[in-house]
Image (cartoon, rainbow, N blue to C red):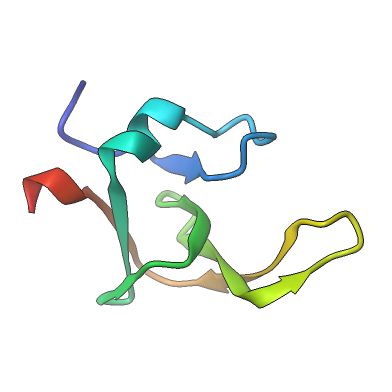
Length: 80
């Protein structure tokens, strides 16, 4: 495996950007200089993150999310 996280990653198994091996390794996301632990999906090249909002669920039982724009810096937790 490489030492750089992918450009886009999702924690939702239904997403085409889901990768269980990378999630097991531990990927952290720094958004606008602040470490976030509730990131559902991110994209570095487009500059956005999708964060879960509390414990609320939508009609299909998925967690409610909000998409925010800004600087995204993913990293592997085992290298820090």
